[in-house]
Image 1 (cartoon, rainbow, N blue to C red):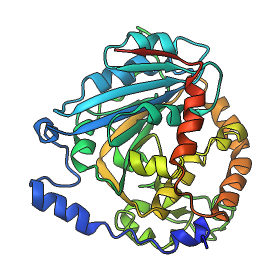
Image 2: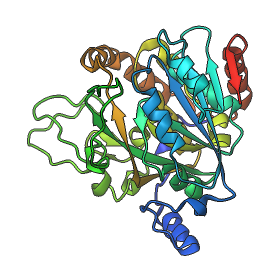
Image 3: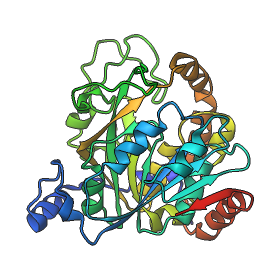
Length: 345
């Protein structure tokens, strides 16, 4: 008899200290420090970037990927979800992109990520959003720390859109800040229902989810920190997963894309945790997340769809933990690719 996904989460610890300390003892590298390029020699990694109308940010994002300092064998797969701007043209011409895919019709970010993961060749898939600008050590950070049962999470520092004289978005002169991510520094409202957990706080909270949970370790066994649990710490803006495990749990649930925004990464996190994966943060892996020019309107539309995607997630928690879905994953992803345009270098 299969237990529900929610019950499966209650059986899984996230005590990853043995893994991070073992890494340091084996390599001499601090888990949370930027990694020398040569340390990644002999490693392979696939980078998958879903994109939809991100021409405003994409050249900056791809240039940052081209500036990564690493000795790993890395392929970069960008999947354009039928953009109506120059996204695909930018991707197909940029030298860092090894495979550019344009889906024939809009399928959603979950489908775009699944399509990219389907054609990925490496055992580790690093998902990077098409509006994330990474510092030059991130590829090496991930490549040397990736493991078959580990999900590695990076962080994001949101940047309000401002165009430079040449039309590209302006970036802060200082490096991105870890504390800018809500999983690190969190100021919840008082007297309002928190949308994920349903809690209502009567007093102000100086929230420190990352520190307060000992790098997510105390979130094992289905525990929570106010409005945060372990699956919710899994954010695909910058996330590395073992490809074999991703395929076995069926990849991203594409129904979320039909309903609106959000929760497909939380559900993937829940599925991978239930399958036995640890969720381990990389504090040094922080990128600038570039807001679009119409950020306010986009957020309004995204948040309007939150109740529907959250309801979908709650429903999936009642179903058996996904496993053995590799064939279904391949069939669905191949269907997206049958009429897609593919440019490979």
